[in-house]
Length: 161
Image (tube, rainbow, N blue to C red; front, side):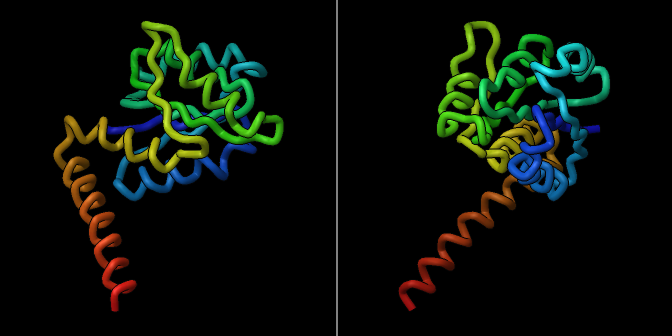
């Protein structure tokens, strides 16, 4: 079973993270969604990070705003690939604090980082990771990429019509 864990620091991150949830479900990939705060629920964070692979997860997407420690802490605890989504929150410094907190990880603790509020790309990347070993998902990624190309071609035709 292919399953992606999607975690975020608080419910206020859900509108951003919903794009990854919807995209993965559209590819037929099961998702496990939870709120795991690095600062307010550290015990839950440790439990989640250490046990995620035992629940069938293949990839973890972690969204966080402000200081954004969640993705890096999960990556330090889990053997799974982690994709960090910096979230522009109300207490954020234009989102740069979140971007840099997730992007600037020390050697040995990688976190793949997408753009600010880039949960859709996080979902695509998670699907691509799974697709590397699952032909069914790979075929869906190929079709998705083809649809992106067609959208551009059709848009160009509309402009030039």
